[in-house]
Amino acid sequence: MPEIKIAVDAVVFTIIDNGLNILLIERKKEPYKGKFALPGGFLENNEELEEAATRELHEETGVKDIFLKQLKTYGSVKRDPRGRVISVAFIALINSDRELVASSDALRANWHPTHSLPELAFDHEVIVKDALAQLKIEIQTTNIACQILPERFTLTKMQKLYENILGKELDKRNFRKKIKELELLKETKETFMEGAHRPALLYEFSNKGYSDIKDKVHVFLK
Amino acid sequence: MPEIKIAVDAVVFTIIDNGLNILLIERKKEPYKGKFALPGGFLENNEELEEAATRELHEETGVKDIFLKQLKTYGSVKRDPRGRVISVAFIALINSDRELVASSDALRANWHPTHSLPELAFDHEVIVKDALAQLKIEIQTTNIACQILPERFTLTKMQKLYENILGKELDKRNFRKKIKELELLKETKETFMEGAHRPALLYEFSNKGYSDIKDKVHVFLK
DNA sequence: ACAAAAGTGTTGTCCGTACACCCATGT
DNA sequence: ACATGGGTGTACGGACAACACTTTTGT
Image (cartoon, rainbow over all chains, first blue to last red; front, side, top):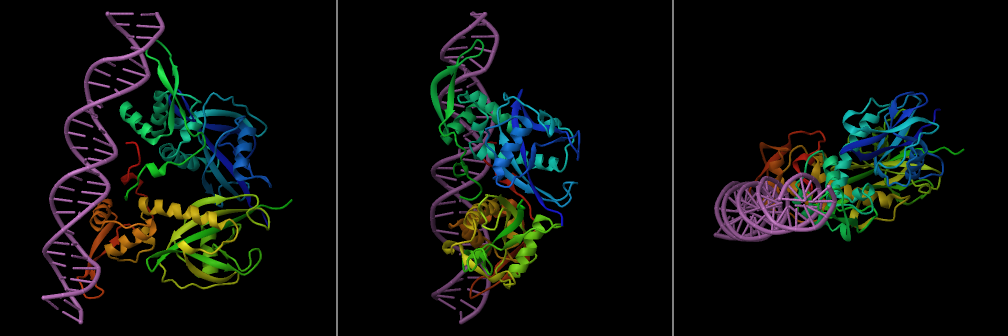
């Protein structure tokens, strides 16, 4: 009787040149050898799901110390030609100045803009589609932004992040008003300057841990 | 090397006497023999995740033909004393006039009010807590209500459902205004009367399939 | 005629949105 | 002094929330 195996996959987002990108590996082995895929792999026996995703991500891309949020589990009978594989997918948002390193299972690890992704292995296109939709929700209802922003950052930097993820421009004054109402940030006394113009105040998150703000954002019925 | 197994569990909600209830079984076998637990069991080889949840639910409680929505996957190393078990949890909302039948694995299947649940096996208390939170979101952002309401129903009946799930009273006029704006329902020409008062118009869902209405309900940034 | 639930509109308030100018700096 | 991005306030309109009376029926 064939065994059912558990895998984990990670959809890791970043912003490069004002564009949303996803981390993909090029597969070194069959199936789908030479194709692009999400970093991921099989769960080991004494490993938490999130640990496995963290480990695989590190092994395949060199990326480590990141926050992963469970997205959904994909379990179609035919999704993997090797046999029955159930995959638990995670999403993450990180800054792009980390170094990417390929390893044994992966030929190359690279960022790909979401608007022109190559064809993907397995059912990874479906996973990416779900992840993109979820990211838009996460950015608006949690403090996940603090995973990609540096320790201290300007409000303009933060706004650009939101604009990239949501895929639309936002009004500067309205954005600042709302962000301040959420009370996620605190001002520092430092400023940041780049080029010949007024220096910008730097902000930081008051809580660096992941937290939900759904209660501050109402939905439908009051 | 011990095998990792996949299970599915279902958190099935209903309303009884204006109160939210959950379907629990009493376990017939170890571990947790005699304790209450969510209906569920192991995934078979050529079975979709949702099919497995449907099958287990039917086997253990007699309930069938219901819509299941994936909630989350629980995979702690120590969550099951028998060994490594990863469980994919689903939620459902059904009407309570279905007959409950126990079977081989389950001593009894019964409804339990959410405000006074017994101690549960495994990590099922965590699953139930997550499911309750998710149900409040689902009722406001999808047409899942049509899974529990009969073919035709009165608006008062529907409002009571929302009040029970959200745990608070709603204004009758505002509720009706909003529900009508969502365009999920259509009027029938039939009325329903119970007791000595004005008969109520009956409504039905225009689409009986599960669908999202997140686009009609805005969140945070426009 | 009375009891009991169904059904219906209006108004004030608050929130979301659109919009334009001054500020601080380097060259 | 000028170019560049940083930073701020207000007014309008639409959505939300609060609220009370009339209608239809059975007894």
